[in-house]
Image (spheres, rainbow, N blue to C red):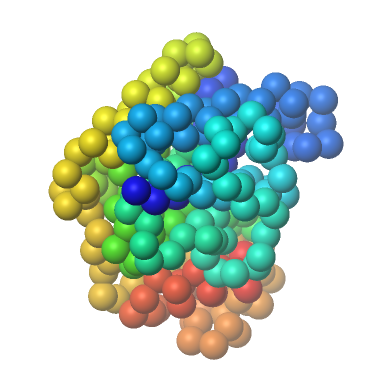
Length: 266
């Protein structure tokens, strides 16, 4: 079994502040280590379920967060950014049997995590994909599914977990924290590791044909920017149109074209 993991940090256990996500801040080290431990737990669960190859994409900010030596020997690590449109799941391809996301978070436009955002906390106010508030989870799950790879497990904030269950009730989740305003209420970091390890193992033991692997034949992405200048610039991307002063729309028949727009316009 080949297993793919994409890892972010804004949904790891206990995280609360942007300073804790920033490599240049003193608060960062604690949460870099927790991010690494949660990914390691996911790897261990996959190995217990029979995985023979694991590829991990470090998908937060610099792409240089995970401590490689603390992952199992069977895990291969992709660091930094190729600038390929697949972004947070670059490296995924036909032949992987399943995928999981660790440390993911609620989307821009939601109030379920003080660190809620979609692709850019600086540029984007919110995104809607086919009318639905769009998270990084949804975008990258669609990329995986476009290669017939089911997304089977995700850990992150409780709000995201609720959205995932609406997207695909078969996906197993672990809610690491609940956000309210600028506060977070988290489970214990060690308990999160146990839940992630057990959750990944259970998810991979299920019949993978039950998981969602389809992608809509037509996709409409509306990106509402925080700055009208950004929206104006993005509206000149081939095929994009201005919805209003702050919102740009792109329509496509495949997720790659949506991700390509985001690579150049977000």
